[in-house]
Image (cartoon, rainbow, N blue to C red; front, side):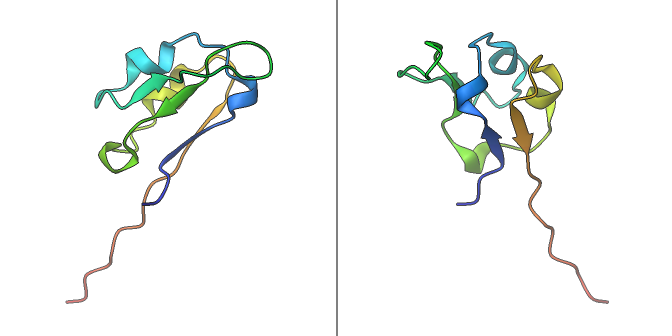
Length: 76
């Protein structure tokens, strides 16, 4: 399983904007706290993520990086 969405958990402030923006509902707040006392956002199912980037667009602190898997090229 490759990671499609990565959060900088140490700087996440639990605003939940990414949770609300996710069309596949795979982002949740963790059940643990980061060093600043916030519950960081996490992706529960990387395989169900569609790498749309809506979560990263909504993040006011730029803690989200979205990776798009490479597509296999078809030869004709």
